Length: 210
Image (cartoon, rainbow, N blue to C red; front, side, top):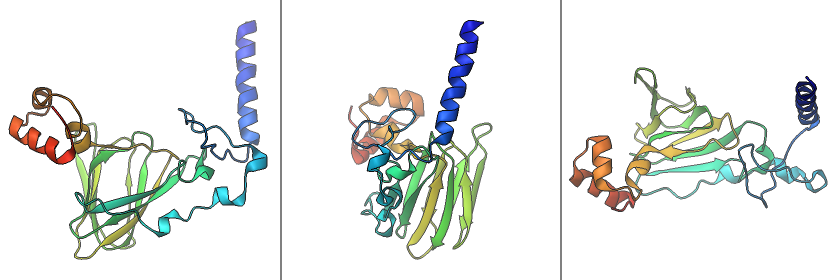
């Protein structure tokens, strides 16, 4: 009984302490953990910690997928740490594609700024596909952890802004997970039902070995 009372008191103490914190700007000088970054000392926090200008200029397009994702996650924007939100800029050249991927730690909302984007996701219960050709001003949501994709379906470059329900949403691209590793071709063949020649070709394109 004493232990239970102490445990409940500890939880209440921790909850009340968290509630009085206005923010927890990430201290990027130390590694992050499951709960995010440790808090920067309040005396060292400035207005600049809550401003990020990096989405104004996109990162270089990946020539393989003809697309670029410019993140504003906690490592780039430490003011987001602990707030449960983040953003990114998505640039798709003509023919550009964001391959099938997942965000293990967050749901995603996509807003099309310019151009057209075919986007969709696959449910985990029955593998049903939900996809739509999005136009300027359209918004689409992608539930946490589900496989989803974006393709430039127009005749001009497309730009979208995406938001996430976590400062560190995580990312796993299916193609890279399968073919950019050192897993033996025989194992990949057994688990994907693809022929060895195709697997070796994809490993060669994506940088895998074995």
